[in-house]
Image (cartoon, rainbow, N blue to C red; front, side, top):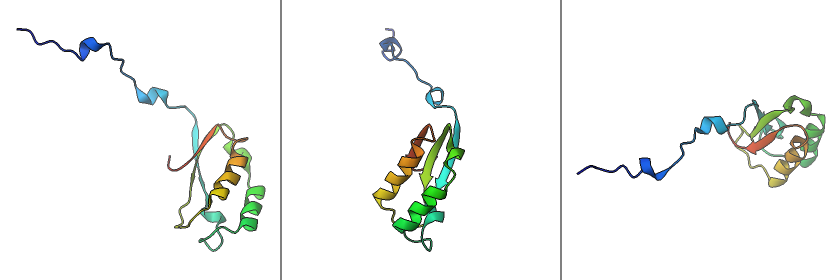
Length: 97
């Protein structure tokens, strides 16, 4: 009696996930430098850093946002970052590369 390989006969397609990965430069945006005393975000100071930052360096890049400091970052801070990044990069995420 011959053993039938049902998996091979199922017509499944193998995908190479590396081929699906978008090609482009990946840049880390660490916001810990913009924290007041490396601990908290002061809204006015944070907005000043955002306004003074050179956003053109992220042009046509993939940006991942991190915070090296052990700080609680409020959601509004990420929304402000998104405001600047949406017009300057291909895609951005909150997390690691």
